[in-house]
Length: 514
Image 1: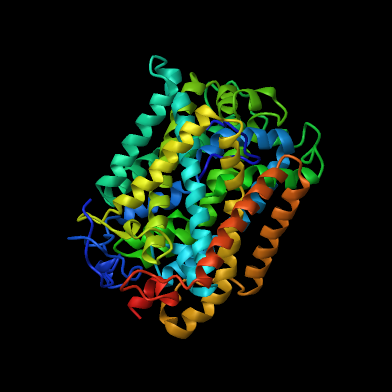
Image 2: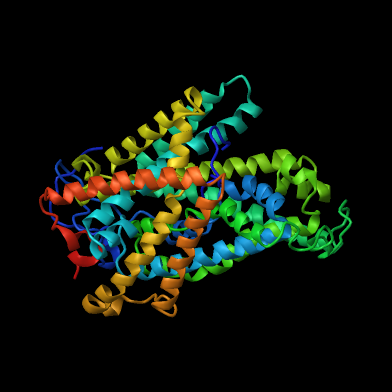
């Protein structure tokens, strides 16, 4: 979902506290327990996270999670680097995401919780793992907030230059912070419409583009060469087989966000159904939105057409058809994708902070909710860091902000790796404690899980051999090492969870129900 391409460059475009100490359900409508103690704590009158997301919200969050601004603005660079072979890069990363989502879906369907993979890692791998990956994931998304706010501000400044860019960034962050503070339902409603626009835009692009490819679109300016452009300029692998791996590094981060639905499911009436549906549909979502749209671009234009990089792949494709004002149309769609990413990024960061607070791994105030089930402190702390990062982007884009970007860039791969390792242990825990909840199963377990781990490790190692990606992965590893070190020190000192929340396995979502 994020629009951060790899490698990440500096300056890139883009309540009332509750008092309940007893565990309350994050999805009480169907009797499943949410995260232990998911009610407000330490204050007065809170009811905990509420099941405010409807099925249509979850459906669109699942679909929109794989369509980020990175797909629209980053695919051109990948095409220029790998040619038509970029399709294989997208297919390889897509396969990896499908397998990771299947593993995460297995755990989330059995034990839905706002902490998702962080809570599962806490249970399966240890407190240090849940603490570390939870904070790294929070860090990733609050940096994304700054990137997306800046990207959206640049588009809006182009439309209304009288308002400075920093003011536009402030406006969009304030508006979306307000929607998240109102209720989880308001977040879901905004995301429903944002994702809907993206889905309609991509679907229309694929249909119209394919008609033009085969010369069936009336009035099209495109010659309608069919599949000829896939091999008429240096073949399908014009830059050689190695370009496929280069393409993988450039597109892998645009897939981050697929996992958001598993965090949101804990605030829905039927989380098991939502997670199962999202997991089962991830294959066609990636096939249509990523492979389908990039395939259309490659069949409408030769891969080395200068306009693909100059104007952006989708704008160039629309221009080749003769769509009037293609650039303006695409700016509207990209702005929608940016606002969607901002909206979901703030939601995701706040819910991860909430979960960390519930497990004693963050300030206790993060675990408090108001009467509407909103973790206000978690939201405000997340957006505050986002505001600070926006300031860094304007004040020190090539130093401080560059460090933030690069040190969070490989977190997506770390998250996926932890999900894989966690699932290896969680399968046995679920079978032992609640086998009836294992409604989604990872295929060919454990062989495909180990194969996915090998794929992710290979990508990380390959990044170390790439001059443009090396700094990114090294800085990310440095930050990860610091966070893990803090987690190990905390464990050694015997830090405990808040009152009323059992330590260790109680951090897992369904233990309160079991």
